[in-house]
Length: 599
Image 1 (cartoon, rainbow, N blue to C red):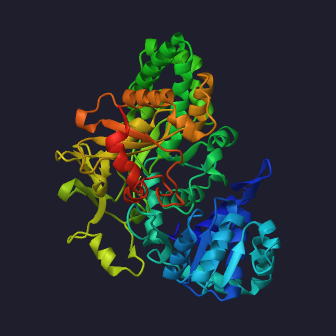
Image 2 (image 1 turned 30 degrees about the vertical axis):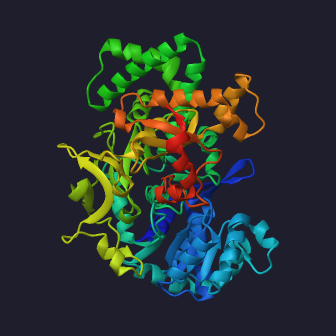
Image 3 (image 1 turned 90 degrees about the horizontal axis):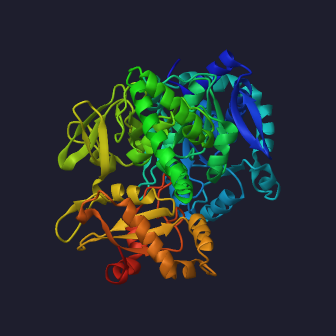
C-alpha cells in the first residue's frame, strides 16, 4: 500500500466493501458506516472543496469533538490535495484566531454550537476565514450564514465532474508531502505548528504492526481528541488494518461506553486507568476485610500467572488452578468494567503507575505504555506482549533510535520525526542537535536491554532551596492515584520543602462526607471542614510511602475548582502547564508555605 492516506481509504473500500469502518452515536443507538460509504463520503468532501476552489497545499481546519464526520472531512481534505489543521474544540477564540492566521486557513469544519460560538468570536480577529461548515445540521439551521454539513455534502455531490481532477491530485501525493499541521498545546510558550507528512504517519503503522496484530475483526473506541496526534494516528491505523472505530463525542462517558462497545484494542491515557483502579480500591476499602484479602491473593496469583505466560513459560498445574479460581472469583470483574477481554490497551501522554499496570496485568490485560511527542507522529517506544518491562515505556519501535544527551535529555531520530515547525525555521533548528537528533525536552534513561524510562520534563524539575532536584510528575502520579484526589500539582521551587495544590474528586468526597454526616452547603464549606482536611491529609500521606523525606509533600491546599483547559492550565492530554498554574495561583502558593495544611 502506498504511503498515501486517502489512497489507503480507497484501497480498503475496494477490498472490504460493506465491512463496518465507523460507528457513530445516533440518539441512544449506534449507526454503522461501511468502508464503501466512508470512501464515497470522503470523495464528496473532496468534490465540495474543489468546487470551492481549494488548491493543492491549501490548509483546511477542523474544530470538533470526535465524530465520524471528523475523519470523513480529514480524509476528504487530503484527497483534494489539502493540508489538515486540527484545532482543539476547547480552544479559546484567541487561540483559534492565532492558528487560523498562522496557517492561513480559509475553510473550517466545526462541530456544533459550542465550537461555532468560539469561531464567531475568532472571526473578528481573523476576517480572512471564508467558509465555515458545521457538522451539526440543527445548529446550521439557526445560522443562515453557515453551511450545514449534510446540505454542503448534497451540493458537493453535484460537482461529480471534478472526480478526474480529484483522482489526479490523490495520485500525485508523495510520501514526503505535508499531510497535517498540528499545533502543539505545549506546556510552555505559544503553540507551534508541527508539520507531519504521509511518510511520518505510515511509519507508525509499521511500528505497531511490528509488535501487534490488528485486523478487520477488531474494534476500537475513539474517545481521546482527534485533534491530538495520538488518537488521530491510531484511528488512521485502525482504518489501515480494516478494523472498526466507534466515535465517542463526550469523553466523560468513556467508562460506560467501554461496556457497550467492548473494544478489543484501544488507546488511552493514564488517568482513565487510574480512575478505574482507584474506584476498585475504594470499593475494597469500604468492604469487609476478607474481600481485601481475597483481592490481594487473587492479584498476586494473576500477576504471577500472566507474567510467566507472557515470558513464554508454562505455569505449574497448581498455579493454573489457583489462577482459574482467582479469575472466576475476583479478577474477571476488572475486565467486565473495561468491556471484556482485550488484545491490548495502549497508554500514553503521561506516566502510569507500575502498581496500576500490575493490577490490570493480573486481570489478563496488558496496558502497553508508550512514549512519544507530537513532533514524532507520535510513537517512539512501546511495550508489547513479547517485550515488556513494567515501569517503563518500552523499547524503541522499528527504525527509531534513542540516546541520552546532556542533562539526561532523551534525544531521538527516525522516519517519524517531523519536517519542522510551520514557518518557524529558528524554532525548528533549536529542536535539533548539531548532529541531527531531535531534542525531546524529557529527562530519562535507557537500560542495558533498551527499555526507556521517562522521569519528567527538564523544565518541570523543581529545585528546592537546599539544592535538591525533584521530578514532580512522579510524586503527582503517586498521590493522584487515590480515589479521592482528582488533580494535584506539586510546587516548591526555591522553597525548603514541597507543597501541593490538590483538587479532590468531588463526587467521591461528597459521598464520603454524607456518610460521615458532615454538613455542608457548598464546596468551600466542605473543604474548610477539619475532618475533610484531616481525611485528605491521611490519603496523601498514605500514597507517599516509600518516598524520600525531601520528596514528600509537607503542606497542601485544597482548591474548589480543577485545573482548566480553557484557562490554559492543562494541555488536552492533561499535562500540567506549571508556569500558568504558578501564575494563576501565585497568592495561594505563597500562603501555602506559611499557612497551608501540614502533613
